Image (cartoon, rainbow over all chains, first blue to last red; front, side, top):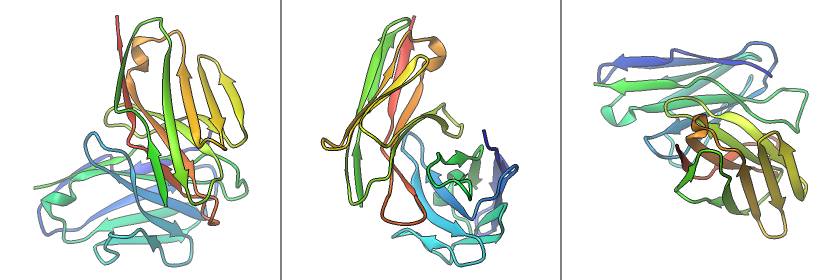
Length: 117
Length: 112
């Protein structure tokens, strides 16, 4: 199956700093990538839809100025958590869909465990 | 929006069968997915249903009834490694992005 690589897998940062998470589709092109957040023992909550070459679409309640998304190419989307606070500590996961195939599963990255201290 | 319900926890014995139900109420529908997720890891794809009926794939089967807004995932011949969270997800058919909405997940514990 298609491979989505997410980096880093774990990151610890100080409160007030920014953290960038990368999501790459390794063997396919993805015009659309999705960013999710998952708190312990809860399900994935969609944060935003990342579209190549255009602005991301954010879900209700997600601050676009705090969670900056850039989708500069067909294989890379980045999520930057700005001015991180301890409550931003969570598991962040990206997913991508194959460009040419509309009727397929989403492929997930390995996830990033963010801890803000 | 989407409203997706599934049981929180289930326990079963190694070698047994477990059925995880999922009901949904959606504004649009373009397929239902089941994912398996082990703690601290990303979800992995198990099955996809877009038409009514049963899809079988080895020890796992998934069923869909669109008129009832209902699906189930059937796990047969349970193994210890099947202990995980199982996520039901519905794909929105109302947009071109085909985004997924997830249920809260069902934690399955397999006991020896």
